Length: 216
Image (tube, rainbow, N blue to C red; front, side):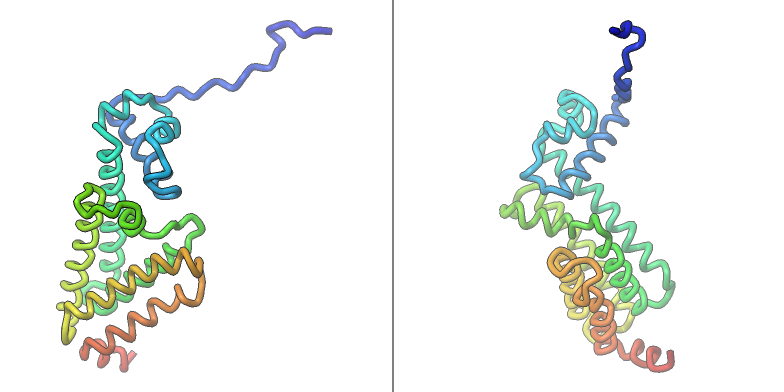
């Protein structure tokens, strides 16, 4: 016996999506962050971002004149998150600059051990875009300049013999964490060694930390 139309199972209602300016922009950035970070910039077109965001292409181009503008906005968001996390690590040890540096490395290793971690978005971008004049590469430069500036400031506060040299060593270690998370994998011995290496570098460069550490 054939069921009446009223008895037929109904398809699930499509979720309505608000597309006012602020909401559409957040949806687009959320989608861009998920897709660009996971799959890379060149592998993802604007159609995929629009589809994931649940808005139309016109909504995208009202807010971003080009894919490059969307990429830069994505990187600005990622940079804000990086700075927020770095400063949160530093804030755990007020007036203890040597421990601030170690804490930042320990927290980064924890983050790099998460299953959905795909490395540093700025390192990833630098690998995808070879032209240093590209707007995305300029975003990379701003992020790395911020990190280096903060490391030099903290190394100076820790009374390192050569603050710039120690900051450069720690910056290299940071990028090593990013790479190791994707090669050796989360929780690997190479990844977990990073904080220990940081302590060795800091102890060698900071007499005050050596003295303090020997009494702990």
